[in-house]
Amino acid sequence: NEDVVKMSVDVTQSGPEINRHIFGQFAEHLGTGIYGGIWVGPESEIPNTRGIRNDVVKALKAIKVPNVRWPGGCFADQYHWRDGIGAPEERKSRINVSWGGSPEANTFGTHEYFDFISQIGSEAFISANVGSGTVQESADWLEYLTASGSTLALERARNGHPDPYDVAFWGVGNEVWGCGGPFTPQEYITELKKFATFTNNYNANVNTQFVAVGPDSFDEYSFGYPEAIMEAWAKKTWTWDIQGLSLHMYTRGGWPAVIPATGFNESGYAAVIKETLEMDKFISDNRAIMDKFDPEHKVSIMVDEWGTWYAPTEGTNPGFLQQQNSQRDAVLAALNFNIFIRHAERVKGANIAQMINVLQAMILTEGEKMVLTPTYHTFRMYVPFQDATRLPINFNKGFYKEGTIELPRVDAIAAKGRDGKIYVAITNIDPKNNASLDLSFDEQTIKDVKGETLYASAIDAVNTFDNPNNVAPTSINASLTGSNVSVTVQPQSVTVLEIVSE
Ligand code: AHR
Image 1 (tube, rainbow, N blue to C red):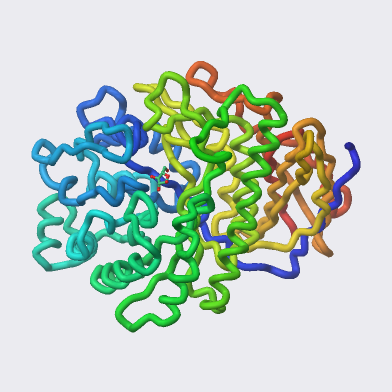
Image 2 (image 1 turned 60 degrees about the horizontal axis):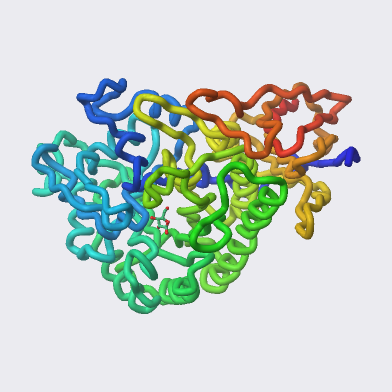
């Protein structure tokens, strides 16, 4: 299908800001996500700064990670922060009950986490323990992090950090209808009120945003959550508030996860893409509920877990959730970004699961080796969309068919970047055909255009330690005719154009 797709970008009408936090990451104490992936310890032969891998830090800086959600996930509701502070040799060792029953040495704790996010230039998103923790434990942790002058603040100073930390987000539990509870919506609301009332940020530099647990697209125990929480929020007293409601949605084709990460054909590709596009309905449904109680958008949607969840890589511990990452994941990441951006009025945060070695990771490591995944490259290409202003873009998505599955052929999003340039991201979903595009920009005079594209000839192409640049962005030729941009994008590809107007 070589018909030219016409796209018109309206630069005269700007939409909402695309919150950079929709490009957030999630790093749980799970498998080798933290130990091995981030933390190797100061004595390691792997080059590190205070125990944190230099290669990983360098790679993450390039994608401008806005926040890192930590320490879980399910792990968050079994985590006791005091286990992870003080002299490393005196820290308590525990069993990671959620993930593979592996030992948790607690050598990566609060101070190591803040060191890590400061090395990559990111902000803090802490998920606090509601399931097995107490209100006092939660209150003490945020006081320890943010206060000045109190006994806890002095303890923080003795542990190496006299200045208060900035805590951008505070999750009040995780999946409390499941691994983090389990609570009914009303039971959680009772907990939420107590935790949110007594857990305080004392650092005036930051308005810590409190994020309540919301629904998961799959889990029926979570289904009543959004109404119940928003209704309670609408009737709240002055003592507590939330600024975010968490949504979780994995692309995993049911439970247990059996979709192969590689070695799939075009129908395997189409099924996964079809499922991931359900994100739009999931957000729309929850937006509608929230709009009833909060028409002014005071509470944001935080999709703080999303991504693909495939069958684990053969030979690995299934509790470690390790999987390969292919061009399909790169396309899928772009489609999810586009959905978040279309809902930018309400969606102000999202965290892909997970950053390193777990699920749809940016980075895979093995000993001293490191490789960047196709998903990493999509994140890097979308950096100009961070805090950009969405612009309306009109086009006909078209369709392509794979067996009984019908999918859109192309998808696109446009924005005006902080640097004043126009950015257009185009995904050619069709795995068989190029798409030729003709972009117009209202009355604007376009002076220059350049772009990058991420394409692989096989839909399940991956990067490996032996062939790390198999899937990597290359520059793409786009031509200017008057003020129209013409470009042909390859099948199953993600392209970002940078356009300079007068
Ligand atoms: O990301 C893996 C797990 O998925 C998280 O720990 C949990 O919150 C979710 O069920």
